[in-house]
Length: 151
Image (cartoon, rainbow, N blue to C red; front, side, top):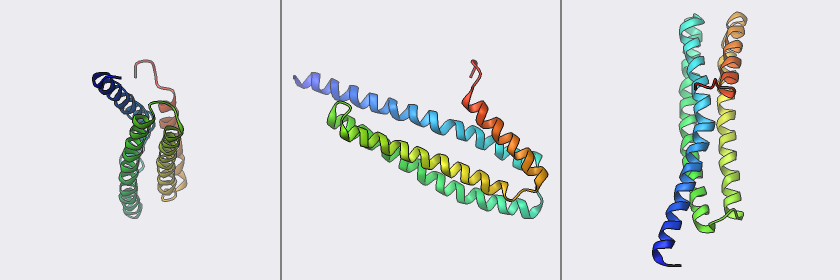
């Protein structure tokens, strides 16, 4: 294989890996962000938190932001590892399979973190607030799972 063809093949593989990473990130990171922003707006605008609740929620949000940032960095590293595996194997081999499994593991950890954060915030609320919170979370998650055709 000539050097030009080899370079084009490597570029195509790198592009495919990047596309996979972007697709994975948009699929698994955008929906939780939408849900999180809806829940954040609910907490700060509609639930009328008292000072103690607000302080507890702020502490939970700070912890979550730190953990979320770490997981996003881990996702970037997992996508880079996937790109390297695709480039090395040039097919769906054992290294690619292992890298894909790792990407899925990190995505699962991100989802678990969001859920743990939501339940931790819910625990701060009184029963009436928790009921409104529950409806908002369910709506945000089901809307994200079934977007309208215009989205």
